[in-house]
Image 1 (tube, rainbow, N blue to C red):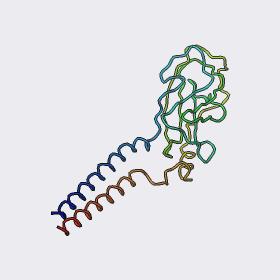
Image 2 (image 1 turned 120 degrees about the vertical axis):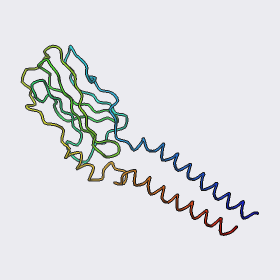
Image 3 (image 1 turned 45 degrees about the vertical axis):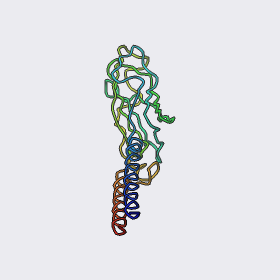
Image 4 (image 1 turned 90 degrees about the vertical axis):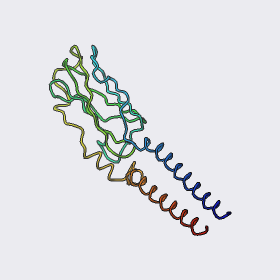
Length: 196
């Protein structure tokens, strides 16, 4: 009788461990997700009477600085295809700021960004805003023709190992934990049935 209670107790302990592990994995999964843009200034789709002096992007998690130059990039393309971003982007926790040359021509501007996510992977997206009247700048962009943010810089930073959680994707750890837990439950059940 005592042996059966012990086997049942082990089974309950194994089941409780499984439930606890699943709960931990479910709550830990969002922390391992890529950064999501939660706010931008100018806002996506905004119509502006005055030209902004910078673009500010706010994410749900801190943006990593990366190991190389140009890992985090913001490109601002004007209606004529010219580049209006100037200098390097500034990173402050969850905020990325890109200074702009004084905007000139009225029309649609495209903000393209590529940043190094908190999980070590690059994240990119495009936003658009419209300048409804001519800005204080010239019609010709000082930055020349634009180029899209480079994938290479973010990939180099990721391969260098900086900012990664051991360099192994989260799903590998989840699968390994489930396999180990399954093996533990099997051993506990066999040990309990052998004694009864």
